[in-house]
Image 1 (cartoon, rainbow, N blue to C red):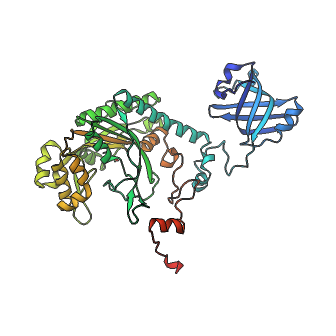
Image 2: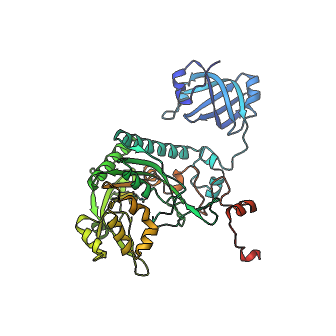
Length: 467
Ligand code: ASP
């Protein structure tokens, strides 16, 4: 029995017998002949049946997206039939046997066309078919490559990959939490993590000086094109570092990763602007330094924004943190913070990575002393008791010899969007939510059964229209 050959390897099998397996993309029947485009994950090839009535009998039953196993001989195409520049454009498969492994209904949209302009609800309902298309295959493979390069880079530099809990306590990341009811403690709830922020800092305390995780962050945000409920981040934290260490680590990782993937970076080293400079020049803390030609060529323009204000005023005039309550004020502003004075002037060692006008990552050097975190929470209007309630576990942990540390999180989707040139987050996620917050393919959110509600001690308030 011959073994299956991947379609990308067929060029090495000219004049040899092969067995391929895959999906039929295109089928054309012409009297005593039938032509196919057959694809597997590695590529596509044209196949032809002629002069074999028993094979033709099977061939005429086949429709697009049927799953087939085909035996045949790889032939060089005649000179004038060569499709230069296309994969397998100079060979074809002379099919000698076909087995239909599975039939397929007519898909709701053609699989061999780009689906970007198709109704997104339909694409997401049939996401498993949408993912078969060339662009989606390319996007998800590029995403995998991006993550792989970063991961390998970090492993080479002593980083340890550690998972942190998904069922946890609310973290102050600035969005709403998704909550999960507890069966054992009716009326009590877990929160899904908005980021692994506190756990990664606790790991610094645990003696893991180099941590990373490809972490899921879950936030109940208003849905927009570049936002969903879930995103993935390359989450990094390191002990005994200063700002420069993290910036240089991430800059080297990004340059290494995107150049290995064949992309061009506009400026190296990455330009560095303070928040104040950025606001003055661009009126925003993110900007695009590329000209039109560079944009057309897909050049990547990275830059750092540093020295963010620690606090900003809320609509009702209270102070809140601008980025991250666990950040360290800049050295020269530590006293202002501890004395809780000149609050609006306090800058923090927070940094953002900007790419092509978007925020591609953000992090900070952290406060590793409890009194700094306490002062931050007091400035934000918390009493000692409220601070204890919110971050008492961190304050306690930080009394046991916490090393100075800092970190960053890079948004995987945002970075891959910049690489692919896609303008929507969902184009680089396998099974994203719909714009209306419903799961692709499956049917969440949906009601619980009465038994589940009883078990969880949950009473659903009837809707007005049901009364
Ligand atoms: N926790 C931050 C975020 O998710 C990133 C960081 O400061 O490391 O945005």
